[in-house]
Amino acid sequence: MIKQSEFKVISKVLLVVFVMLLVHVNVFALIYGNESQKGFGNPGGKSSGPTIKTYVLQGAGYFLDSYSDILQLLNKIELAELNGIDYVELQKIAALANDNILGQMETYLNLTQLADATPYDQTVIDLLTGFDYAAFQQEKGLNSVIFAEVQSYLSKGDIRGVYHRFHTVAETLQAQLNTIKTDIDAQRFPQPSDLWNLNQNAAQSLLFGQYTAEVFYRVLNIGVTGNDSI
Image (cartoon, rainbow, N blue to C red; front, side, top):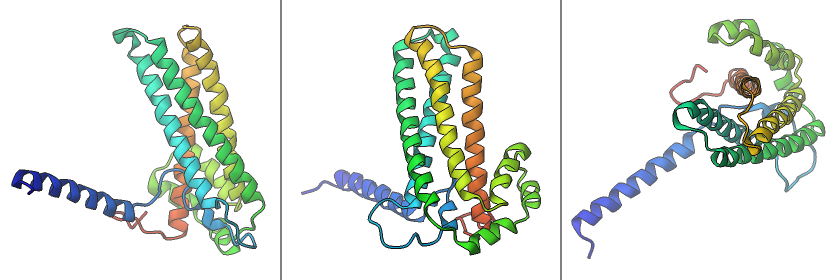
């Protein structure tokens, strides 16, 4: 027989699981290039392989994981003066970041190849080319330099160009991380300029991907729980 205390514990666990399931059902992917797949039509014929949406989500996941690793690496280096520097720990973090960037590169290569072979949905392209980017940037208070780059692609309906940019960024991040990783593997403190450049490119790419998602959410009028005005 289950004791009352055990029953309470089980009930709490089930409640937490139930709440997590509800959150999972209602959550939207928001952060990096999401909903851009809706700018493509039917590629013709049925395929059992990954879809453009699958690659968009997987690529975003790899990017966010790699950026999390980069921030952790920067955190350890930032506090090295106080805590000392553990090169073995830094090697592990850098290796994990590298793995996630390689996954990002492969995913975006597959995405660009599939997108290049898939026709656009002209209705969505017309929405993108007719969108008031200046008003949206001002309303949201977005970084004008980064948003201008987003506009340079989407105002022409060039979603494929966005995907190719994602892939190029992944290649750049990998090259920059490898420079830092070489120093760490040799137990040399990384050059500050290398750390700054890596963080800058990752941070700028994060905003580029977010702004891309924001435009698609507005253009397609996709509501978000608690913020339907997005």
